Image (cartoon, rainbow, N blue to C red; front, side, top):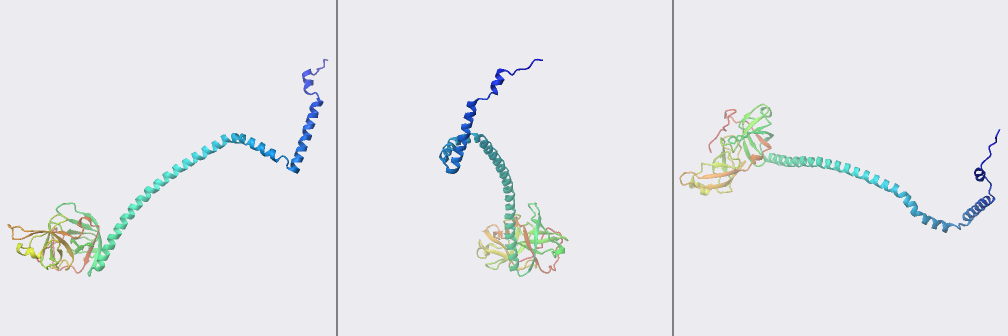
Length: 302
């Protein structure tokens, strides 16, 4: 049987080299000596500092890809978070703007109601507050629908006011709602008195929210009895409106030679085109009957 002999190359790899063993031993002894000296006397601190400084750029270069990746990830995450926060803030801004608009409307309504209540406190008669439900858009009929009716004590002929002055009167009272005719309706006439002179006459509606007409003052008396800026108040005649409530202010006085009467125009003091809430004067219903549901208010002479 043939025996296998190791090759020369194999024998060379595992051959013991005395010189290599000696070098290994010397390096080992030197390492132990250096560690002992460094541990006891800190003799290699300066060398370590120099080597640490020299190696630092290598550490930086090694960490650079990792740091760059972390920086990009953090910035992308921050960008997404900022975009999301920005979207949330925009939605919140829209919501707050809507709330602000609502608060503005409520504040304006609160001012109107406060003014109306202050007027009610200064009014000797009892009052009932009502809100506007609808407006008749017929240009020749100035009617409004209110959210109070017979069940609340509303009756035909009841005076209607706002915080500035007379608005009109009730012409139809249903169980839960009521219809009022405005003083500017072309079918309405209101007994009034010129506050400065005491002259009594009628204020007629013209179909214009900004105009009342005083057609029954003679030319001869108009020059002294009526002047631009005069305040018109209810005269108390006719049994519908109590005396002394503001109605309008004279804006024009014209003399027509072809007519025995002056042409006098007044502007209502009530804001008839911006009615939201009104006051109904509470008193005993008039004994004189008017036709329920009629669009023509009862007119009484001065």
